[in-house]
Length: 103
Image (cartoon, rainbow, N blue to C red; front, side):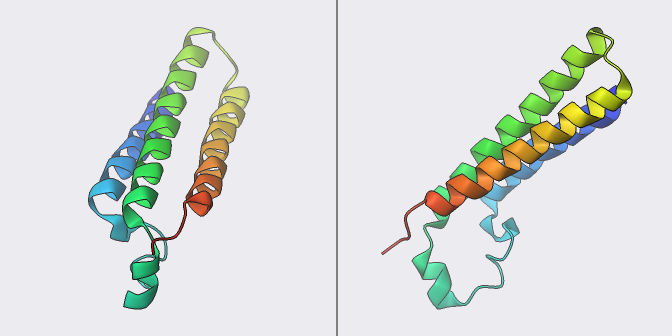
């Protein structure tokens, strides 16, 4: 179970780093028209996505290692990791929507 959680955390970190270099990985950005793309400050959106995904991945890894050493039951581990990921993604959605539009 620990290996799966660590892999998930590393995957979130990797995706976060890739989103910064390749903003087209963000959902919907690649399919937008050129006019809509000009209205979005993709630099800020990709930076925010990177930061939150990396922090969520690190929190997932930290939580899984701590719970492993505390001998927490597997069902509770799954619930905590799922809550960590959902919380991180909700924060990402909220923060990305608060970024002002480019002029």
